[in-house]
Length: 386
Image (cartoon, rainbow, N blue to C red; front, side, top):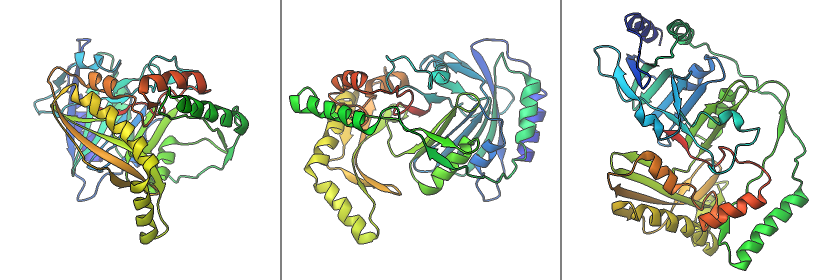
């Protein structure tokens, strides 16, 4: 890492400043890891808090960490920025971090307001792993402070191993008590019994007080130690503001015109041994209720994808997707879409699914606005990279 940072600093010294507002330069250098993968989360912990970002896909083949903010825009408008290579080498395509609210038509409340202007962010400094290839890159815009960039690169050249001391957590009383929560659930069930809804997915918040300040990167590392699979993400929005998690759900992935999506709905715990685990999985596959609710998600995704595709393949039957503590029903889909759909179009059409909202989706969203007492913000919204 130190040699890569030194090489990057030497290249930056030779770069002419960017003068076009809709242009950014990208420079990258390969990192020699000597058969070992870089510790991305430890690298992030060495960076100043407030503008750190992280993503790793479920297969663990792709991992990326970002520090700072080179550019920010609304999702979709990021495509207006042109990438230039800052030196003679050919750089790979830059990656933007995306974090969108669950309900774009609802104003963000005070807890989520810091995330209002970070829907699509290009980091200033990037560490990337694609397979076994590691690269360190910088993105430079007209607003970049080169002196500040050099200082941040020097600080990240040798990430320090930090001892993570986990603070004690104490659960605080919820504004929405169990009695009120039960009333909300009963209201949702009544909508189903009346026929206006087939499914509704309600959310509530729980608050914990920590005995000392929390490092969100350390929290994510701890979470990943318990759940080794799933998509991992971290989005910071200033000091003390972070949204992070590990989720099995893929809304979509895209390579050219090839789009993959998944219906994930229906859950059982993992068994205490192999036999119990298998029996729990079989009970999930045999459950009429879980299969019916899973099919709501399959129907919605199939309907959307068939309307924008020239071909569509859907698994004939759901399979079991196992995580550390739970197992889900999962149905995979693959579509070849028409060329006139952007990433922004796809996300707008596919989100939200019945897995996070309910069915029918439009009716479920209206019901959630009436019943839920929290602003979901980014929770259950699309998070990832483009």
